[in-house]
Amino acid sequence: MATIYDVAKQANVSLATVSAVVNDSAYVSPGLKNRVTSAIEKLRYQPNLLARSLATQQTRTLGMIVPNIANPFWPEVVRGVEDAAHAAGYTVLLASNDDDRAKEALYLRMFLAKRVDGILLTKTAGGLEADLARQLRATRTPIVQLMRSSAAVGGDKVLCDEDEGSYQAVAHLLRLGCRRVAMINGLEKVSTSKRRLAGYRGALKDAGVPFEPSRVIHGDFRVDSGCAAGIQLLKTKPDGMFISNYLMTVGFMRALRQYQLRCPEDVRIVTCDDHPWLDSFRPRLTTVNLPKYEMGQAGARALLARVVGSEKRISKRSRVIMLKTTLCLRESCGYELIGGRS
Image 1 (spheres, rainbow, N blue to C red):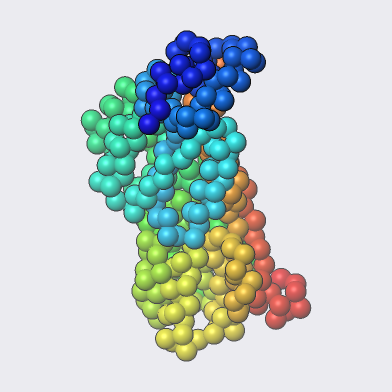
Image 2 (cartoon, rainbow, N blue to C red):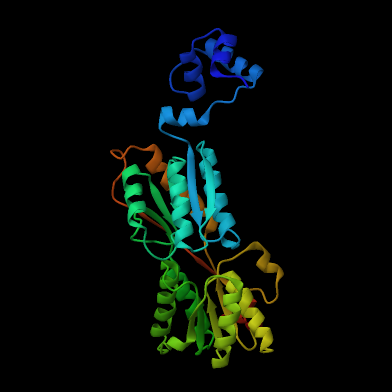
């Protein structure tokens, strides 16, 4: 395997010149640069990335931790991150914490050990171990929180206006005449679930409909929890359902079939998040669309601003970037049954 010494010998230049070309760290005349790049191509030289990172104090990598990469929500967020990172010359290391604090801590330590330049984190419920928090402070590794916010971490945040989106979803059901609107929420202690519940309660309050705690069940954003919650909630005979994500909606539809009920004739449904394939299912789901790709891009750009910009040039105060949601009206609320008007 060729070394930097072989490249310098082949190009008849100094090691410093080869290093300047490889790391783009100093001006090299076009003639010398062409000789070095030609030698690199001929010898198939691969720079030592570890040595480069030690020299430059940068690895040009970003770490990203999401709750569950199998959840259809996250791949498009990751794509937004990857596209923005790639455009800036960075690569992304991806991990899933499965909403497990121990697993999350393991990946955070791994990212610090690999000297990533910054971390995008969707925090699981709970705080950080004291020694891990100290490590993060000591290394001053920039962190941007995506989708969820946690005081245990700090840093910039890229969020969706989920409370407003949830409010509009439930208000839509109430406008259609529903008065027994139930909710399948996500994990109780994470910020996304808290904001969605706040929107649900706000819409009920403004419509003069009493909040009944028994009509809200917390799942874990997965299919089985949606089914289990649906089986329990359908005993209360809801006429409308607001469900916090697509996977739990799949589970609820399974419960609906067990009760031999139909959507929207027996129960109207609004769910969080929109996907291209939803148009292929019947009934087509009314959704609160969350801007996934845009969130990934905004998160990566906010993180890169912290990584690339000196702290003197950008505000030390944490920023919150809030993205808007959109209510997409379809058949699961009876939209088409009433002539396209609701």
